[in-house]
Image (cartoon, rainbow, N blue to C red):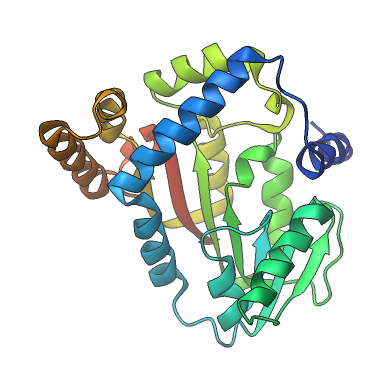
Amino acid sequence: MSKESMIEVNKTQTEFYSKKIDTSKNLIYRFWDTLRKKGFWAYRQFLGIDDHVVQLHTNWLGDIQNKSVLDFGCGAGNLLSPYLAKYAKRYVAMDLSDVLIQKLQTKLRNKGITNGQFISDDFLNYQFNPPKFDVIYAFGVMHHFKDMDVLLVRLDQCLETDGIILTYDPTNVSLVSKLIRALYRPFQPDAEWEFPFTNSAFDKIVNKFNIHAAQGYFGKSVMGFPFFFISKKSRIINNWANSLHKKDLADLTKDSYWFRRAMNVTMLLAKK
């Protein structure tokens, strides 16, 4: 897929996220959305994954007071947007949607954070000035690009020689993930720009960048979700789910292909 074709897809994506799309007639999507928001997100909070991600990413970032940071595909703000905007020497927030960018700017202003440049444009096409960043923070973004090679070249162009990229994306490697996504994809309204990482995508990333660290979430612990969904108050189920989550945190590392098999993966990348 060419860069120009991806930019055209991104125009559709911009409209999707900027306007409220009517999905009332898509019963499968409504069911999945309800399951995700009332079930999976509750399970995520129970396991404390967001807190772990914030702590992990903060450690990976280190001191950013003298660094330039691109909050890439930030939407209306992600877990670390306020932190990045507050402490980075240069903070640039970029998203396709001007509506979401304005929401982020308002949120930060309400927190007393006025540092930053806010851009609603396509990352593949925009010319930054200055053009390079010490940190590119890509939370839930990279899997929106069908042609990983085009994206990786662009990321490399915008990253300082000793810079880092922090990612967080869904995967499509394990049998459980493949089954769930195969059943849902025909009814997915945003399927045109949703491509959870396959082994092929991981291989392309490894060929272009070094993976300094990686962590998978919802690996073994995904087995606990159906039981948690049925009975959130069961101490036995909760303890079992927590034990599975601890195994995920211990076992899914950059030194093994196992982290790819988790439902979500975060990575710390650097230039080769």
